[in-house]
Amino acid sequence: MFPKLFFLSALASSVLLASATPQLSPRGLSLNPPTSVLTTHANDASSAHRATREVELTNAQRLAEGLPLKPPRRRGTGTQVARSAPSAVPSTFAGYIRATDQATGLSIGFVRTIMNRFGEYGLTNDPNARLEVTFTIASGSTTPIDITATNGLSAYPLLGGIVGFSSATPNINPGSGNYAYIGGSGATPPGSPAVFVGNSYTDATSMEEGSESAIWTFDPMTGGITAQWINTDLGKPITYIGYITDVLIFTGDKAAFGQSFGPTVFVDLSFVPI
Image (cartoon, rainbow, N blue to C red; front, side):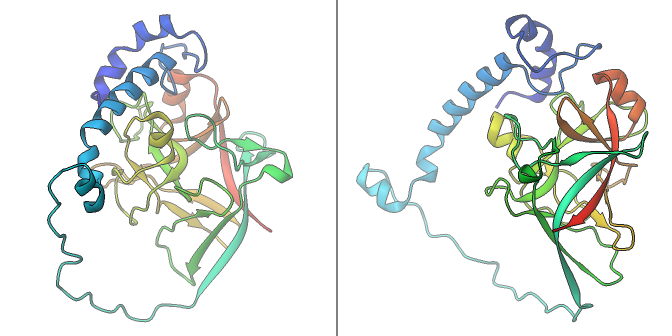
């Protein structure tokens, strides 16, 4: 895998070779990787996969190919996990996620079940194309939760944030145009910064980026759904949700993101029960 800085420095030349989507912003930044960068990285990922194939073979396959057997693996640490104390009775919710334009207060659609070609969620006004989600919260709990898509990408059903292609770091802060896509993520615990647990963007592009899943808070009184991104220093920046070129994103600065990538609709999310 090429270092991320290589891709950022190569954007100017790669755009000349790839005039198709994604388009560049006024500052020359691409919200998603250009086609030429994707092709180059896919070829590199394919070579890396071939180089590591022996590690992934089962012992039966290794015997068939005349390779030495893998040593047995220990299943567990040998220590016992303490039982947790009983918690409050949880409540489970099932429904859809609606996006409302913060500027107008009008609904602009629901999170869509079908992702774009980069493995990112957008919006739809087709009632048959809405993403169905479920989540569980304990009464009075303020701990961030996972939201699970029940009709989305089965490989990564958890709705999460994935570090953006043109982000200089995984951190979103005031004064920075850094961002994260909303897509499918492997599981991460509450309070964890972005880690490499697998996600829909990485699967779609072969470009490894960190992601976070347990970042959501639901207010059963208002139906509001908010997100809390975690920076690498475990800081909790203000997390805005935006909608641009049919992609839902997180950022820490509306103005800085807009200046970097162009006009963006900032939205509030709310839960609509089935």
